[in-house]
Image 1: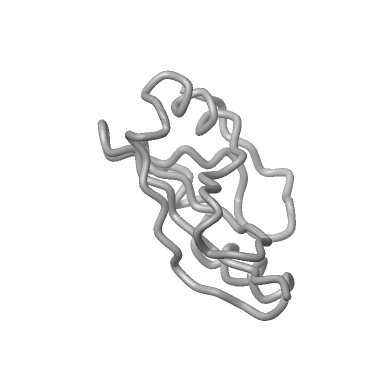
Image 2: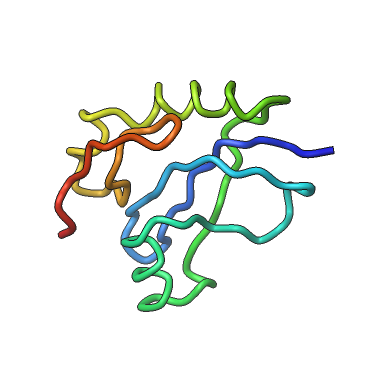
Length: 99
């Protein structure tokens, strides 16, 4: 059975973070996120310098999209510590320029 989760991955070196959603079979699958800026940061700092915390789990993908949308807003994306480039919830087209 699939689990839909919303998570926060934090760079332990500088406090920057990424909030995302993920479909998995196990909460301990090692997934950190797929954001392009996040991936570059993982390459630069190494996986060991990142920590993922599960913020919530859901039985459906739709519920995870809805919850992510409440967390990753335009306002949140303006936080200089936020790695997210798009608002949350089922994709989206809002995009900020990478630092």
